[in-house]
Image (cartoon, rainbow, N blue to C red; front, top):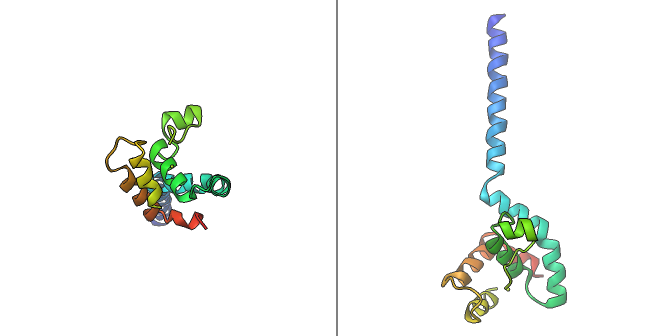
Length: 122
């Protein structure tokens, strides 16, 4: 009988630590970026239809500029871009002097490819 209770207690503690591990991984940067994309994709698609700026570039730029919605400007002022905009768009932003980071276009392109953001451009 003691072995049975010990086994139940052991399983309970194992389950609790498994739940804790799962919640920690849910807070990963990858997951936070996916949640950001899920939340803002509809608005990016709507704006793409009106302004003709690809949703993928809007989402990638929002992820990069706002720290996937976790930055101070995004949280306090709902400003996800600090103001700024497929590949040609990203390089165009850089050429227009929008970003001081020499790798800005590559970072946007990397996010677009990594999270398959072009799926929102159709």
